[in-house]
Image (cartoon, rainbow, N blue to C red; front, side, top):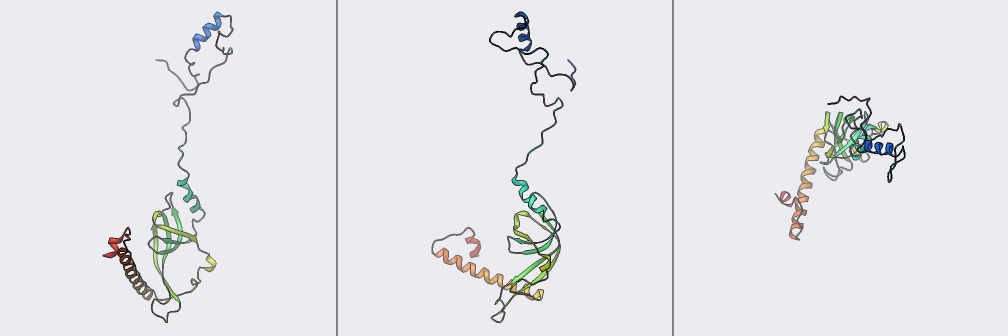
Length: 205
């Protein structure tokens, strides 16, 4: 077996030696019906992958990095993250990956109670913050997110005022129960009319 190295020329293509013999028989002229190869010219076929050719980089789909590129500008900034289950989180984005999984630091969960929840005397909405510390958010649960203006970070949301955390939690729980009862009534009415939702069975329980 012949020993080859990277510096060796690649072998000639099939039929090259036969073509050279025909040129010698015709006095160096190109053979009929074919084109000769100039003297001293070496063919350059595609090199074998194992003969010093650098490996080609793997190309991933562009959509995999679209979200990650947008999160790059938001790193180490304070964000508001709204989740699909209705929770609102405020924290500093410290880390993320290509699936938009987020790691938030100094996280606070902000609870909102709309006006008139506690009665007609409640003319403004109430809110309170719950300390959550380091918080890991799955990317598929993120509904939207945005950077918080630090100059207005201490301002209360328009139409809302800060209240006691336990009071806000209790009112938020009552509001959730009321909304659930309303949803059940609506689903029952739709069922009577012949409409059937995806979670109709769960809502009627």
